[in-house]
Length: 138
Image 1 (spheres, rainbow, N blue to C red):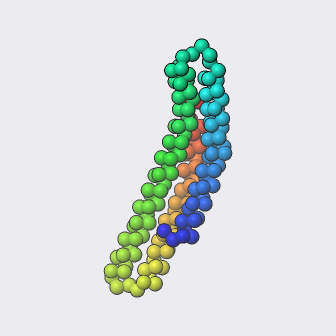
Image 2: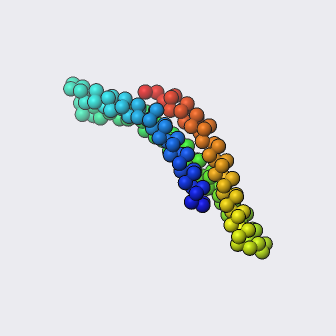
Image 3: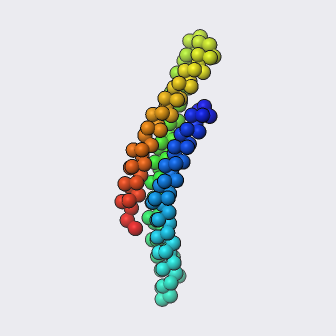
């Protein structure tokens, strides 16, 4: 993917991830640490019970991180498929005898379109992630 297009996507996705981290994940991390500390304060529990308690405290955050990772992987896979389609179109054009500047132009327009389409998906992906994060039992 052309560097400028890649930078555009990275910036939008990074902004989304930072917002999710600030508004959702960070709060979950705080609850996890508080919960874990409370587990350690249970002086009558066995080592195994404290360990199980801490594991329960970590579960919501692990689920949240899994959700975000899965959604980002799906997004990346879709973007990759789109750019591979552009590669195929460019190869077909080149094989039909087109000159390199025409092929580069097609490739740039096609990848630009993929990037635009996928950047437009980020708000709905963000909304879906927020809803899913909010639904994780604490």
